[in-house]
Amino acid sequence: MSDADTNGAGEPEKTNINVRLTESLLADVDATWQDEGYNSRSEFIREALRDAVRHPGLTRESWKEIAAVEHARRTGDSETFSREDILGDDE
Image (cartoon, rainbow, N blue to C red):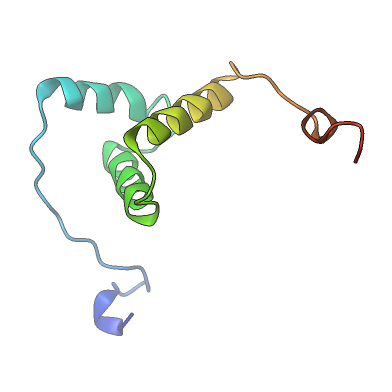
């Protein structure tokens, strides 16, 4: 990355884009970002885009499963397993 790609603090510059969403999708985003611990709607959307770009082979169903597991973990609704539970007694 060149110096021209950063702001004065060494952080990458950000560019604004416009995205048109349905009202229902925007409502889903707004209902999710705070519950999931993000500081802003933009932060949530940037993270979702990063995940999609970094892992293009994952299907929509895979992302839904990952999101459900993450949500359950963050809200304490998931079971906790020990290393022994996962590996069995043989390890």
